Structures are given as C-alpha cells and as structure tokens.
Length: 367
Image 1 (cartoon, one colour):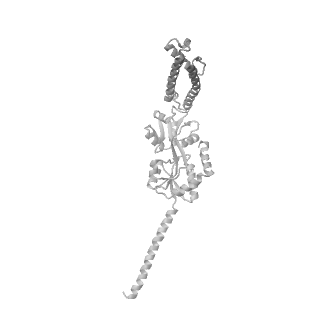
Image 2: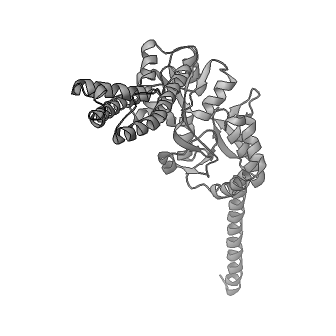
Image 3: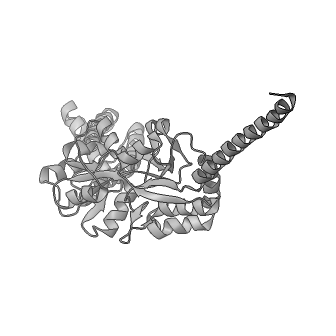
C-alpha cells in the first residue's frame, strides 16, 4: 500500500467508528424512550372502601382515587393489575410490579422488603360480630361480672370492714349504748353503719370527733363509689347488647375468630396465640360470622365499618374498640424513583379540600 492509500484509510476508519458509536447511542436512547413510555404496573386488590372493583372492571376507592390524582399531576401513565395481597407483596419485593395501591398497612417487615410513600390514612384493627347470635347465659354473666368488677367489689368490702372497725374503735367509749356491748357486736354495728352510709342513707350519728371525721369522709367517698359502680355495670351491659361476650381483644381466645389471610390482623392473632380461620376476602370473613360459622371477625376497622354498613346492614355490628393502630400507604418496589415525586405531590394533595371531600364521600362521619 502506497503512502496515498495509508492517508485515505485513516479517515475511513474514523468515520466508521463514529457511525458505530452513533448507532449505539441512538439505540440506547430509543430503548430509554420506550421504557419511559411504558405504563407503570400497579398491583391492587378489592379492599373497599380503599380499592373497589366496579362492575365494568374499573377501579375506584380512597387509595385508587388518591393514586389517580397523584399520577395526573405528575403526568404518569399506569395500568392496574388485580392481585391477591400475597402476590402483590411478592411482586413488589421482586420488582415485577412498580407499585401497590389498596389497603396496604406499613409494617417493619414490609418496610424492610419494599419502599413506602408517606402514610395517607391511619386506622386500627376492629372486631365485628353478628346481631343475631347472642351470648349464652354464662357468657353474659361473665361479661357483667368481669375480673376487674369482682376485684373492685372485694376491695370495697375490705374498705367497708375497715371503716366499720375504725368507727367502733372511735365510738365505743363515747357511745356505749350502741358500741359498748362487746367487740363482736360493736364491730358488726360499725360495718352496718358503713354499708348504710355507702348506700346514701343516714346512719348512726357519731359522737366522737374522729367518728365525725370518719363519717364525713365516708359520705363523700360513697358518692364517687356509687357513680363508679354504676358506670362499670352500665358499660358491661352496653357491650353485652352489642356482642357475644367480647369486650376486649383478650376475649377472642374464647370464641371462633375469622380474619383475612396474609393480613396484619392474621399476624396480630398469630403473635398472641389466638386461634383463627382465614378467608380470602373481608367479605367472606364477615359472611362467615353472618352465617354463624364464626363468632367474630378481626380486620381493619375502617373496612369492617364500610362493609357492615354497605352489605350487611342491620346484621353485623362493629364493636366500639380499636387496637393495634396502623397506617396505610402506597407501596413501591425497592429503590423506586417514584417515591420522592409521589411523596411531594401527596403532601400537597392532603393539604387541600379535595382530600377531605374524598374521605367524606367514602367514609362519611365515621372517619
């Protein structure tokens, strides 16, 4: 090859290299553009009132409409994919889906496995029971005469006995007509006087100074004691009218409990060694209680109240207890770039009247 040929081949090699680099850059840019145009895959499940699948296949609900508003502001394209809760959590952890939008509670274990946006709703677990299946006589008696009430009555008995003994001790020398016939009869009269004062009646008029002081303290204390006893019994009877002997989560050990599989309520029951039976959906769990297959269902209280009002009207009651407080949030796959822009838009949206209107539409005054 002569000198002229060597001079010409160098520019040709440079030109070929530039063309290859240009093709690679164009291909990479096209791939990135295609990935950017691909809609976000959003996993969801029917969890009213937070995610509701309508008859026409569309989705609505508190969490769903929140997501739609956020994506509208951020100009994001998305598509919903109906999954079970287990499939949704597993898909997020493996990165098969980009987001999870439903009634997804934030737990330490889930937070370790995936990303979460700021919580948008706070709630707790609740207990729903059937109005038709009342408690047995023994359950009713046990509910009214609880351990706390029995302990309170025993304590008051000891206090009454002590006051009676003190009254005899103070009055035996100044009031020998009533208290001077011996210790047994004198203490008995003192206890009788304490009971009479506790019930609000006029007892024996004390003579000694210490006897009068004790009588004054006893009469003032009797007002508070009677009010306290009335409140305790009234509270127990009110709960009795609503449930089957359940006034506290610890009472769940004595009844048949239903809940939803892979939920935080199932985890709560399992950690406390409370036997339970799982169902795929909250509707089926409540249906088991309605049909008498279970005595109580434990699940997210907001969802229980919504379903009891919408589908089981006049047949299911949600008890006035809430425990194991938790928060709902949008779940994202690990390392998602959507977390920061979604959080910023979420904080702005929650400060508007539109968010309050959204909650009122689905929850009314029960929120």
